[in-house]
Image 1 (cartoon, rainbow, N blue to C red):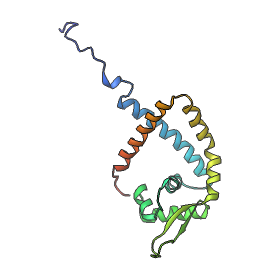
Image 2: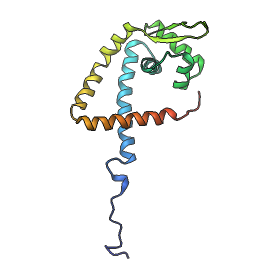
Image 3: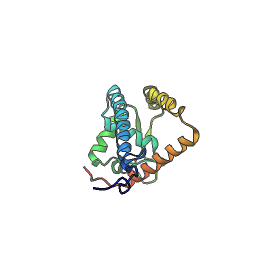
Image 4: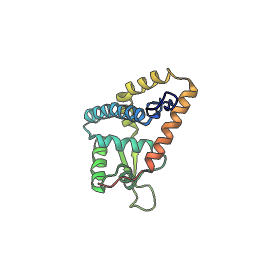
Length: 163
């Protein structure tokens, strides 16, 4: 039998404040809450939740987005992306344009008028985010934002099988 002196008294790293399990639970809960809001927006707009995911990709894209890049990002087939874009265009959320000399290249743009509907619907999310932000010091927010940025970079580098 081990004496008190022989026992390892270091804290179990799985129970530390930054342990992987705690992050996994918190991230799943955040994802679930945001998904709940996204599904509500999709239903209110007569869209599929995947359509709202596509809208987010279009909105956040730093350069003109093509249907092919959207397909790669969402992991959908080209037919599924075309159907998604058709629904979004019919609902007035996006427009497809041919702006280059190569008429085969299509760019997807978020319609300005559609932004207002999204802003109205997601205003409670923005307000909840602001209330949460107010509870942290700027230095803490900088670390949290840095963590989320690095996590998104790591997740973005993962390749998922195509459907």
